[in-house]
Length: 344
Picture: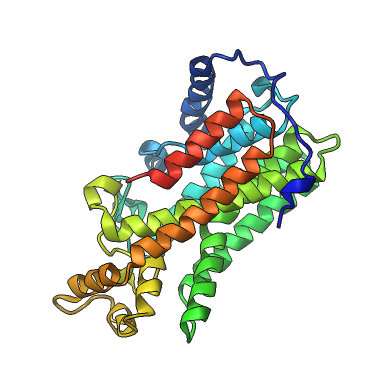
């Protein structure tokens, strides 16, 4: 765990920014808007079918929160960093790895919709979805190798390892509620938070490759870990509170219909252990969904999950507060608040 008291106070005052916050936002917006286009340029296989799969997978890109998070973390922590020195090529790997994992996850989870569009496996078939995801990971690995930083290669390899372990954990369960919660938090880290944490760590190693301070690397990793946990916990809340139209993907118990017990269900099970029987049969009986949602409501399962998300969110903000105030830090704080308060 990061010891904030020992963190070296730093500033991004020498960034090529004016203090006008709107101008700073425009710079960030311009960089992140180009990421989706750059990804398609890098992922341009000769096979027309494979190219169609790749371009389709990125055609409904989200808000690019991960690249924004990584970019702003680097800008906040590395006081000497000019955004011109941080190429999009160094930022897009996180979105490539994330998208590839979603292509595989949607197939494993039998999820038919992603970001308001048919999932890749529904549109092109399961075999093509697997190969498309593999190709994206291959290209990300090739880009990573060209950087020539062995420590960064190790960090990115670790996050891919976590993604695989997290997916396997999702297919297993534990015997008691304490074990289930521990299993849930560990799975959440591996499937979601590890990607953000390790990419934030990697970008500090890249932007300060001569001699990155241990405190800066630790701060980046811990911030990413905490905000990544926040993101997924809020996502699990939205699974039982938001509509499919809001999320652009199946909701209203989509995880429960797969037999998955997330935060709201796990907390509800402390008062209503019979909820596990309903989840284990994947809400297959009439009235199962309504019954589970009632249990969650009566046990404050959503509120308890939000409290945990708030704790991770506050940890992330406390790490930022240990860094000298700057326009970059303010933007990162605002993005963190947006992640915690999002409704889709």
